[in-house]
Image 1: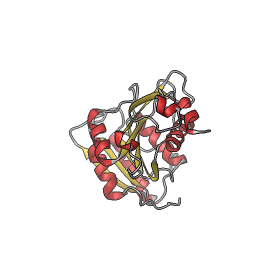
Image 2: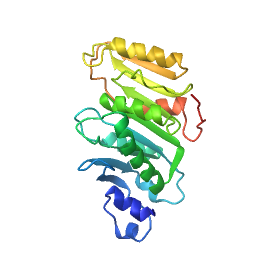
Image 3: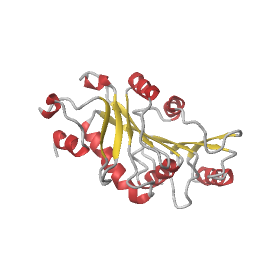
Image 4: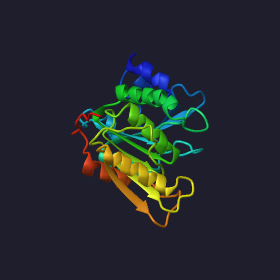
Amino acid sequence: MNRLAFLISLGLTLSPSVAAGKSPPVGEIEGNMPGASGKTYKMYVPPSHALPTKPKFALLVYLHAYRQEPRIRDDWKRLADRNGIIILAPHCAREAWFGRPDNPNIMALIEIVLKTYRIDRRSIYLAGVSQGALQLFYLLDEHPNIFRAAASFLMSCPADVSLPAGFPLYMAAGVQDKIIPIDHVRQSVERLKSLGVKVEYVEHPDKGHNVPFKLKEIWDWFQRVAPRGKRKVMMR
């Protein structure tokens, strides 16, 4: 499938130049989720992507929480502009993420974006909040070598998920959380560490299921522990 066909499958609004086979659209984009009728994803592509001399971009995939919509905040866009990041926010196929059954839809969208835009495949990062973080773990379990590093907020790692030794993972939780008990999170952190996963775990003593997700801090952490373009293949 050529680039134009990919863009049409994404449901993007094509400008005359894109329809002629030139540069894909930049800025904030909304399109149809593969395999999820009536659901739309959001994406932000820095305008500098249109410059042919610009180095390849990193890709950051953000998975939303339960009953939320995909979003890309203005401060995220500014961060993306400064650092050469394309931000992709998929939408769950139903009212919630369903784990492994949702993986093919997300991966289909990621692959289309990778084939449409100038992205360094060694620089794909993953972040999720609450139920989006649950989906994050199932994506990592089935596709560990796709992602450079990941950040999970407000979720424990399921017992049937295994990550490769050496994988960089940030986990944040609220001690007062009544939805995801802190003991479950702590136990999953210890299990992941026993597998050799490089977990950085942060507890917020005064927070419940409301630990703030600050993308700039997560991006800075990604670049400290797993710099873009320097990925090593990890084995289970």
